[in-house]
Length: 315
Ligand code: BMA
Image 1 (tube, helix red, strand yellow):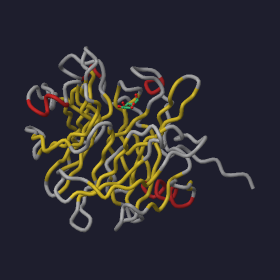
Image 2 (cartoon, rainbow, N blue to C red):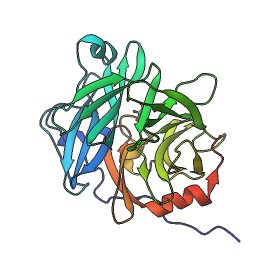
Image 3 (cartoon, helix red, strand yellow):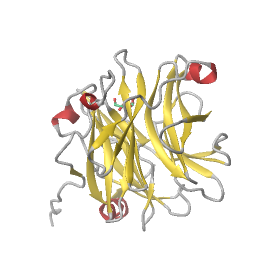
């Protein structure tokens, strides 16, 4: 029996792109790779922008419906100039992920400097003021998402160390205090001659479902025309997120719209945030070609089913 043809897993919003540099009241070249969270019925988006010198800062946009966003007049977070932060953020701050936990919004972001890229952790309670907590990795590490819940009293994160020896894979690490991290182990590796064969990395902050934690990640495939960034899904055990219940074999989103194919870096869809809704859908936010922000929705149960019923081996 031939397989049944399925419709798209992610329904793109007809009004994409939802945010571009034209919506930003200060000079930027791009608006992309935004972390998004919903709190008290409002959506807060922390987005990355390249300045006109090629270095990145973070801006803030707010929305009542998750589609129509208004950008604050001032940038939300720019590299600090002094001390340890000044040293490690000198080349810019990128790709924020927001995690709501214990009444705080924790933001992990990539801090670039002459020493490489590492992850900074900052906290806001009101999306007005922001406080740096700690640099939580060494270089080179660029993608970290926190789980919005503690497990056995410890914070848990997914990370993606660089490696010349092994394929760039997804790891898990634990911390008692958000600052000191350890007990790391590898969970998922890229699959050979597969859409995510070159590297994978955590994308959106994982969210809880009936079947497990859903982790929307990015995978990269190298072609004769350069790399293609797509999105996929992984399901982690509800009580022990180091246990993988399934890695969906097929991607859930690939660059198709003109602003995903062409932009600052072509053929990129890259997520840093997703918002699960009470109606059983999730709003997935992604940067298109490192230049604009887009959104689409998927059924949470479809994503979980892809992981459980049509999965590939995690390693
Ligand atoms: C990755 C990161 C992302 C970017 C992607 C595609 O390595 O730098 O910020 O979206 O490449 O250019």
